[in-house]
Length: 232
Image 1 (cartoon, one colour):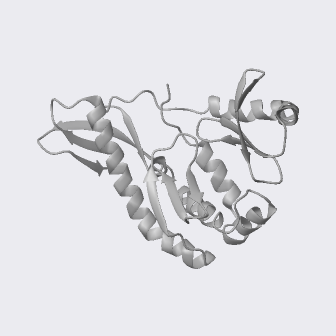
Image 2 (tube, rainbow, N blue to C red; image 1 turned 135 degrees about the horizontal axis):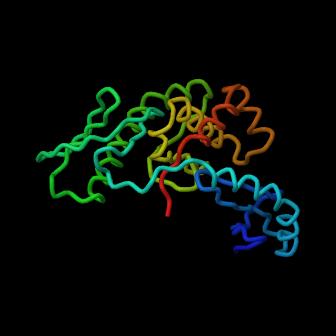
């Protein structure tokens, strides 16, 4: 079910829950409402209308955030790695590679390669960087919290930095985290691990976040304030 109220598109998802939850999700400000199965559509709409001014303020924050221009992956473009900005320098060769040197990101690619092919290679390069950090950091936070996931995976997501399935104990982490400052991935790893214990973003969830990472609110602001990918 979807609503459009005052020009804002809102996705409604009914679940086996007791209370209604409203989210404005990074990185593009998607608005979703989770509602109890027993709640009728009119009641949901009334609830959303009471929150529309707040929703618009949150969405506008994402609309005004700086975004990278559409990528062609050519010399002179910028590339962000762990929060640092690099300038792309293209060299031609028979094997793809990406090397960071000083403030340059030296991309070696075939001369006939397309922008899409270069983009796909860079995404896989980001995946390698992210996986290496997850392998290093996940055991640290599992030990701190006493929570352990059964498996994890990386994928490119447009509305979430991470997600967790408490039943299967599987965690997904957004590929874009490799572009953000290092503390951001630790915050998201902790966030998703805590969902293994508490499904909802309620007071109990917040208390666990406060216990294990007292500065998590500041990190969250830092993460959501950093430059976003180009979006059509």
